[in-house]
Length: 315
Image (cartoon, rainbow, N blue to C red; front, side):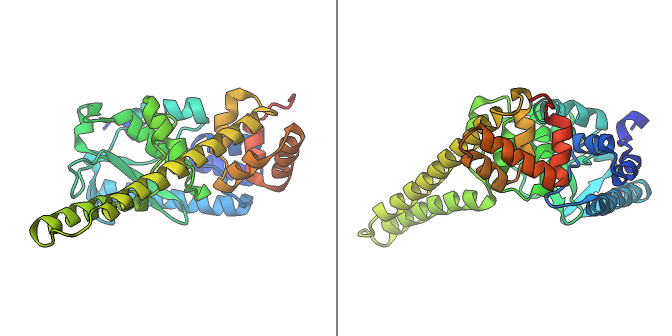
């Protein structure tokens, strides 16, 4: 690879300035997909990022010396590295909508075990928030495969990486799918909030299939309607929760729009925890929203960075 393909952003010097309270350095780190976590002060933030940079350096050293890096069940080879130029091209949707560009995340072209329908995913490691991404090898040569788009997958996973420190579950997939080119995925991509939801739907479907087999081969009198009812219940639960989440996010967005420029609403909401989204949605009027934001900015470093980047002082 060329030098331009392997270079990484020079975050450590920024961190030194940020630790001294330099608001511009804090803003640049936030823009690079390395936001301050909820409740972190400067010391805790700096300690976490130093741990992250140390793990990244260790990975780079291992790749340079051994040609591969083993991460849990993955064997990542240096020659399978996703070029940085390609990662940067994929950050345009997140930069435009959320004001962040997490192109520091190492990426690799890998086909894991049982990868028949695999498109890509990210691996996360706490407490340093170390992360890496993998996409199927086909994307080394082609941008599109099956229903997947390489740029969208990478941008989607970089959204997750940029929000790792928020420990979000309720709205995590919704923010990641908002950068999709597909209107259907933008609206319904967040229905499955965790693997548990997928297993719940799959399990109810397999239970129905098993019941049909038992009825056909062993027990003609076995009632099937309870199994159909189980599938309907799972669909009803997922659809109902999706509607509640969607309406809550819209109310939070509408309340925030009363006091902040619409151009950066998504970027501000993107940096909210699940609890903060729900608190915003419950606010009654513009004075309540303004007071809520003022208290957040006064009480937390993370919100001071958000204010420096996205709040209009004149509003």
